[in-house]
Length: 116
Length: 114
Image (tube, rainbow over all chains, first blue to last red):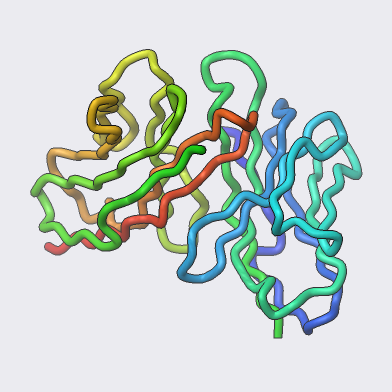
């Protein structure tokens, strides 16, 4: 069964460094998302992406964050200058427009980002 | 605005006994509601979803949920808990003012004892 994959599973970085989190969505999906979950808190929406542009972003997704689909398979989240409060589990998700499963977002296993 | 409230942060059940996880939603429109499960060190897996076709929704692994508009509830149940059901469960609503933005509840941690 197709699945969303994410790399790395765990990333440790120093405050102020840039990180890129990578995701490979399910191949025929066209909508892509990033969510994050700070330890002990709710899963929060960050951004949605369709047709090579951001469809929607939350107030968390400030100028330090960017997303890109650099090729036909990868979807990346970049944090330019990490802060301690960026430490969280980051989930990528994708879904397919149309059909009965149009609502269903399929999630990857997550990347745990630790900022020191 | 849409939101979900999970009424229990932790639920402990004995193996073989019923499981009930409670979720109330708030929505101005007919919502799309989901239950996701997260096993330790795993991603979020869809258990089931409600999208107005039927009020009683059956999902994977013997779980089901009933949409009750009068009570604004979408509780998740399973008749007989298995050890493998130990996980965190999230009630989720898709916001109607947004194509794909999901809003998560705080989660319910389920512990299953032998």
